[in-house]
Amino acid sequence: MSAGTEVGLGPDLHEKLRALLGAWALDACTADEAAPLETHLATCPACREEGRQLRDAAGWLSSDEPLDPEPSLRRQVLDGCLDRREPAFRVPAYAEPFVAETARLDALLRDLGELDWMEPATLRWHAGSEQRRPADVLCHLAAVDGVLARALGLPDPTEGTDLAERDARLCATQAGRAPGSVRAFWRAQTRTMVETAALAAPGLAERFVDYGAFRLPLADSFLDRAFECWIHAEDIAEAVGYPYNPPRGAHIRSLIGLAVRLLPYAFAGEPGADRVIQLIVEGRGEGTWLIPVDSPGTVPPPDTEPTATVAIDGVEFCHLCAGRRDPHRIPAGITGDRELARAALAAAPLLSRP
Amino acid sequence: MSSPAPIRWDRQIQRRLARGEESALGELYDQFAPLVHGLATRVLGDQAAAEEITQDVFAHVWEHPESFDPEQGSMRSWIGTLTHRRAVERLRREASAGTGADAAGYDGAPLEPPSVEEEVLAAATAARVQYVVSSLPQALRETLLLTYFGGRTYRQAAKELGIAPDTAKHRMRLGLQLLATALSTEPVR
Image (cartoon, rainbow over all chains, first blue to last red; front, side, top):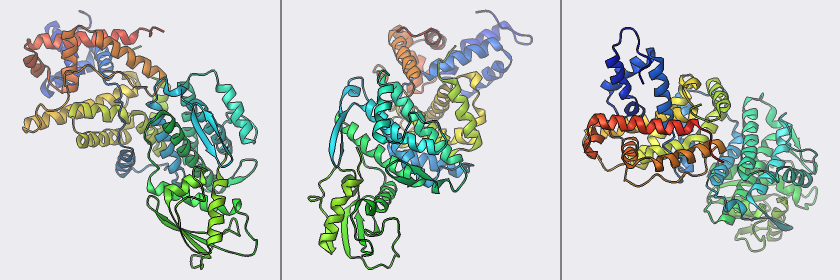
């Protein structure tokens, strides 16, 4: 260890500073000691290289803590950053629930042990259920995400429009891969989708995404993907016995908004009857919506007199729409046309897909 | 090769941060928040303080993405350094103010086993580091952990361990050299 002395610095001082490199890399010397060392590093390649290596090694001393930071910290930290420097490309508001839900699912996946990845989760929809290991649940999500990715001009991880076929094909191609790489594949696609939406020209949000059996405006498609991500994250969490919270209130509100727009398509209404149900959501995601049950795709004027009013818990309503609750047993306060309200609640699970 | 972290991702995210993409900031947070928050909590032993450090580190990266130099190491290692410096500075500030002087941090317990890491490669590296750390001679290990997680200067560490300051410096350098060597060799499969 005698290399690297240079003009103007005696070998003694060089060795003295060099002996300090370990302490410096651990931030274990005082500022008075660090300053001359850092000046020395600027001119001594040998010490600089060793310093770099030792710092890098020190950086690996801390493995990630098994306990993730509070999910609420994310928004707080990001907002703090954006206050200090205005972003040139914001994440569009319609993509925020998707960003949050994919991040939460990814944090759950990070904590899965080898055996957890073998644990079958139960995926339910209104007409049945299916058992899948977490990696296959990710393939299921990625196969449907892929339709939106394609609409954004990104590569499609599989092909075709039939969702079940896409799902089966993607599961087959990913079948031999380690859960970790399936997770990386799923996550990479979600991130590229958000990045692309953030960089795209305004007006993109109104473009339609074609799912074969139905079409959604791109902004709603992002909400749909957030919704499904949350629900299947819950399925995985349940299978491995981890707690999992519902999305933030503002995001639940967006998801309810989507369900309210879609519900008239699932409900067998009477064209021309123009009946409207007022939905009052309590708890997380609280708010009030008007559902034009007989006129899909329309927005009733805010002063419309509702035919019936339904008061329901927000998270429960989402679970109902995801096919996770029995519409005849779900607690709901109803006034006005009870029959209509019950029929609308009974139609909500039809929004769920396999 | 001192760090097998994915360099391509590091450079891409740096470019996107420089361009001002909020989505890149979100990805960065998701990737490194457990590291930053975990390390700050470990050093400071205080949730609220750890959250402030987390805010501070990400704000720094967001405001100054150009100050990351991929030639000097990985993004992960850079962010680890930013975090550690801030946490240790705060700890020393509090210690000199006479509050919470030695409550925080190092409790003498062995390092936690590695959790599943963001990248498969990073997981392999972390596991290797944990293994190397656990197989270091006791004297080297306790010196490294006491300074890194306990936020001690080498002089304080020397005093606590009952050794000469030069010995403490020597142990730190030697311990890190052993780690660096282990990092530069391929993982055993």
